[in-house]
Image (tube, rainbow, N blue to C red; front, side, top):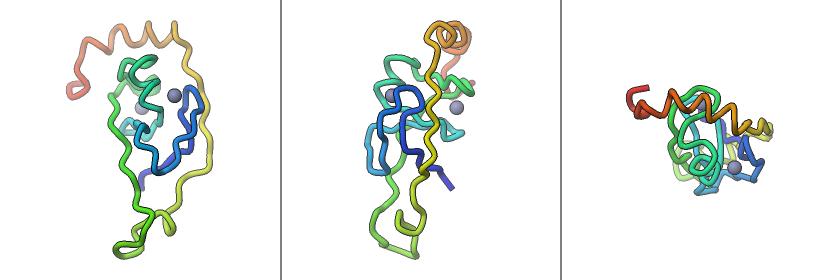
Length: 102
Ligand SMILES: [Zn+2]
Ligand SMILES: [Zn+2]
C-alpha cells in the first residue's frame, strides 16, 4: 500500500494526507511540488525516475474500510536534503531521457 509520508524529503515541509502539492516517485520518495520543480527538475534524486501527484486517500469510509482512518498516513519523517551540486551532476545525464523512457 502507498506510504503517505508526512513531509518533503528535501525541505521538510509538512505534507499531510490531504496535501495537493505532494509529489511521489514510483518508490514513494516524497517531495513537495516546489522542490520537484525548482530543485529536482522532476528527477528523483534517489532513483532517477519522474514524479506524479500523490493521490489523496479518502478521509471518509465511503466503501469497505478503504479510508485514512483504517489505513493511516506514515509518521516516519525522511528528511534527507538533496545536495544541489551532486543532484545537478546526477541530473545532467538523466534529464536527457524523458521520464517514460528512463
Ligand atoms: Zn520541499
Ligand atoms: Zn525515487
